[in-house]
Amino acid sequence: MVKSEKGFLSGLILNIALLVATSNALAWGENGHQIVGEIAWVYLQPEVKTEVEQLLRVAGEPGLAEASTWADRIRREEQYKWTAPLHYINLPHDWSGYIETRDCPPAGCIVKALEKYEEVLSSPDATQSERAQALMFVAHFVGDLHQPMHTGLREDRGGNDIEVHFFGFPTNLHALWDVYLPAGFAADWRNYAQQQQKEISEAQRLAWQNSNKYEWTAESQHLAHNNAYTDDPNLGEDYYRRNREVVEQRLRQGGVRLAGLLNQAISPQLPRSNP
Ligand code: ADE
Ligand code: ZN
Ligand code: ZN
Image 1 (cartoon, helix red, strand yellow):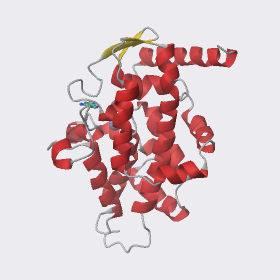
Image 2: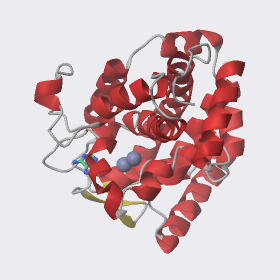
Image 3: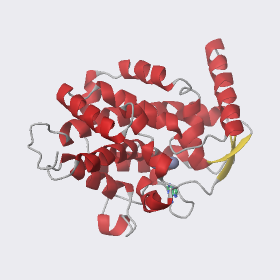
């Protein structure tokens, strides 16, 4: 192992210890969502940026990165309990493409929620407050949909019921992908996001934006079964090495695609009947 890798791993382990100590365990961690939001911001068209800034003022959020964690901050409040099933979709191992009537339960799922809030965001009839909330849902759900375990199996609640140890720390497979795998590089999320954004080539941006939410779902479902699910309850360096790149790529893709979605959904030229 080269020395910088060693430093990197000890940094990861220190971050895990800190996370465990403070039990700071939100979905995709807060950091994952902030990174996706921060990357997306760079790719917004100028007039879309202006519109997003207005909506963020309505929402009382300082930036897109911060606003993208709102859906996790409110999901346990009584009035927002109904939003909990909107953060994920449970798909079987042998799944081969999204069919709403089969795959999305009556309480809702992330794919249908994204469709709905995208529509609110682009509707000329929605109020600014409805659109501000839709923006925060969309920014969050694009991030969640890129986390493979958010398309995991129903029987283990997307890995929440699979107990594992990561470098000796007790956690579960879902939280591992939400929080602990990104912990190694997301300590300073703004810095990290800006550095990651510079790594994205124009060809990648085009290819990634030229895909839809059904394809993002399929990618996550494949990654869940090819990379995330494992029978080994004791995970550490090998698992981290195999999946670190995957996590980083999902964060970059999430950012680029969130921007593409917002650029499409927010057309400031449209006359609004409900300012
Ligand atoms: N979070 C809570 N329940 C979940 C489930 N069944 N699948 C994925 N993520 C979840
Ligand atoms: Zn999660
Ligand atoms: Zn979430």
